[in-house]
Length: 378
Image (cartoon, rainbow, N blue to C red; front, top):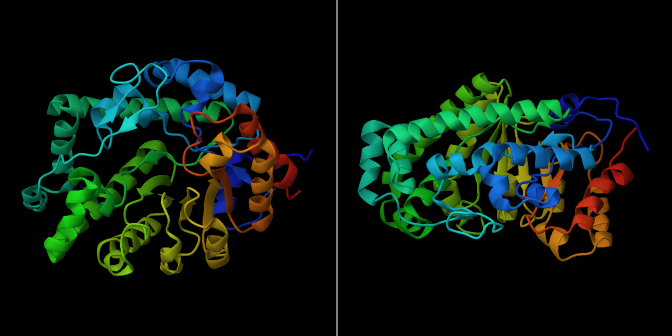
């Protein structure tokens, strides 16, 4: 067994900077599996903050090689998610059974004529209106929800540091502008807007983009962590053509990453779905100034072939490997992943998106054990 010679933060920063490390960064997005591992219901995990933290503590005690915490419990907990969550959700113990996984609901909360309201009052002001409508809360309740979010975010960071981990990111920023509007309008309505409104979407998308950059800057100032989560799904090549991507997604993504780089802020681009056809575009983003996180739908090995030496890549042991495969299959895939990336090529070893709530415990063990077997460079 090797010996760590870098701190968790040193290892993460070096990996993002495409520099050699003593071993691979281990940064799974643990999510609701932690409660199952600890033997509590998902209702307890998501609604009882202290029980949730203790569950995550227990998992990290079992697998101390987990050195970078990529979970966002402060956005998942019911007290926050039911008030300022990015979409309306059903929660265990409320609309669902006590040990059910929470669900995000797709519905049209924003109407087409409200693009004009965004142009008039700005994106963040409209965002408050959307949250009132999505969660059926008053403005005062929404503002109080943001205070709760900040409180729990600080508690989560303190717990992360107490475990000796690095926070993969300090704050959750909104998803890409394309996804913001897709989620607020619903994917069906927004995709119609792309064809029927066309250039009329440019100004709302730009305003949203500027607001996301501003929010990232404020979050970094509040947390002291210069890494932020930026989500993206619906603008992938799996959903829209390259022509649409170049019009509605890429210009704003490129400007966002460039502006964040100017401010020394690293976006972790948590890009679910299949982005394989879009990969060449990422070569035009600032080298070493972002992380591309994949969920298994994108071919991570093709991603490595195209982007190695340009950006760190996070992923990508898929959900099926945790739930229906054998531990041997988990190890085989982890070995391929950990040995394909060479030291200094910026791998952040992770689950593909969230580690499934119903993951087999023996498969999770195989995931962590692979770090010691195949991910040490010293």
